Image 1 (cartoon, rainbow, N blue to C red):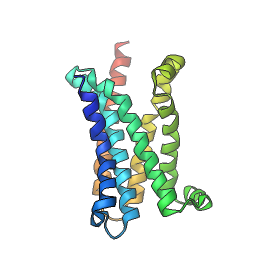
Image 2: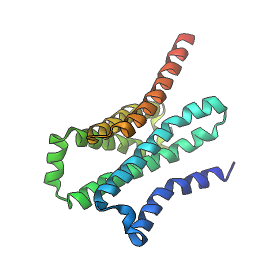
Image 3: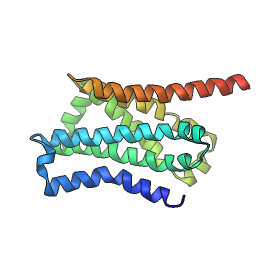
Length: 195
């Protein structure tokens, strides 16, 4: 059991390590459009880890194993890391730190608006993901961290609106998000009825 966290940590680092490896040793993997490839790669992994974070509660409920809850905070922080990396790639490699262009994109392009909003909403979750802040905020901590439900919807919208032709991949991720959110809603309603 004590080896699970380090193993998961290494697995969560794997995408960025493989991306660095491709950058130095196998640039053909990055395709003819490397910036676009890296943007898509970091965005997909951010979304996958966000979904994995949301899946921890159902996994705990199904298996009755609390290890899933113990992994949730680390997963959430890695999701924030990959979302921040995704934004950094966009502002650095795509826009070359032209912030006036960034603000224009946030205002004029809806998929960037919702993606940026998702990142902004993740910031307080990342800042308060430590024992000291959990104790300090008390019940408010749980309320604050429920914004993950809004964030996952925004992330799925970002992906759906970004893709122009083949919608299969974003629809798959949106469907997974829908199932995970529906599970939370049903669980909430059941608990409400028991009271």
